[in-house]
Amino acid sequence: MDQQVALVLGADLSHFEALISQLMSSANDQRSQAEALFNLCRERHPDALVLKLGQVLHSSQPLDIRAMSAVLLRKQLASSGGDSDESPSYVWTRLNPATQSSIKSILLSAVQREETKSLSSSVTPFRSLLPTFSPMESSLLIFSQLAQYIGDMLLPHLPTLHSVFLNSLSHSVSPDVRIAALGASVNFVQCIESTADRERFQDLLPAMMRTLTEALNSGNEANAQEALELLIELAGTEPRFLRRQLVDVVGYMLQIAEDDRLEEGTRHLAVEFVSTLAESRERAPGMMRRLPQFIGRLFAVLMKMLLDIEDEPAWHCAESEDEDAGETSNYSVGQECLDRLSIALGGNTIVPVASELLPQYLAAPEWQKATCCTHNSCTNC
Image (cartoon, rainbow, N blue to C red; front, side, top):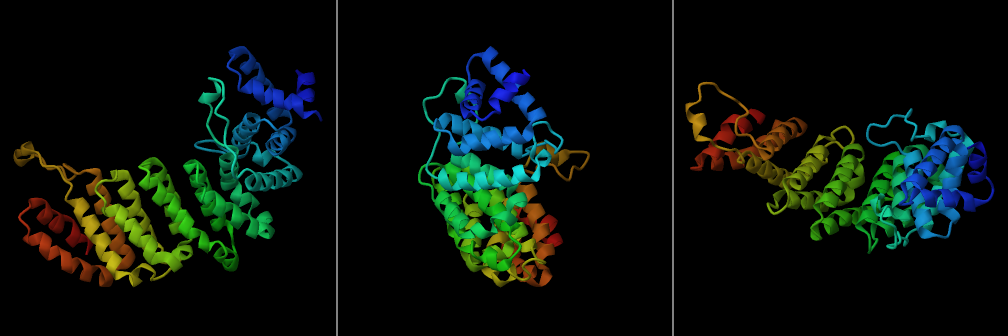
């Protein structure tokens, strides 16, 4: 086995490419042997293994080999889920500084070079079970998860990164590449300490928002929700990044929240975005207070959510009281966000908005409207 390790990590790249090919084999025995050899390389020689993966990603000709190396490299360098730094599949912290520096350069080069590449469609049945990341998508995903480590090194390359992000966000073929580019952009913006440098990426925002718009227009709400989660992260950490186009961004989020044709999860995330922005008082004081027309719309959306409460005849004669009986996810989100909005903006901002809507609800014949006024809105105000 030691001779095999020396061979695949040696100067001849073809041996390592053969190992990657065997990792994609549909033959269980061949694949198992390749996995054992790969894991041994990672255990004994993590620096050499990672550099080989980077070399294949950068130089190998077969597209499927290069794509698989990107997937493997991502698994070695970026922890996910419950993986800790001690996980055997996460080796970044075990690499020496020279290797880390080399990988940073390789990733930057790969992100620039792979802008139009995609996985070959002619793959084996086993390969179809692998994560279908294109080299470009994998490079962006790795970049996104390592941004906090490599951000300082990339400062001399800001114009190049701006171009890469913009081109990737505008990718005409793959929505997954656009989502990966959105994640990379959001994470990189958060890593830039200089306000002036961060401002150089501010004009990416329309393309970042377009990723969300295109996902919704194509009916891909899973991608739309992923985009919303990334934008919520940006709103919470760098709200000032949104200020130049705040009216357009908040207005669009409220359109999503008001659209009953969309999934509840999508609408809830749009509400979460605006609520998060309202709570960013320390990082962007008073930003949402300057948009009273949107506060009124958000308040109306949240009040409408409170109407989504179920009524069961058996509850009318129930012997015990359950405060949460009949509550739906809409009701819970509406109640929580009303509380947060009231605390974030204060009574001087909320009371005038509530005073316009509450009388209409109290006068309405529907019991749900009166209930949500007396049990929720009045408390919040």
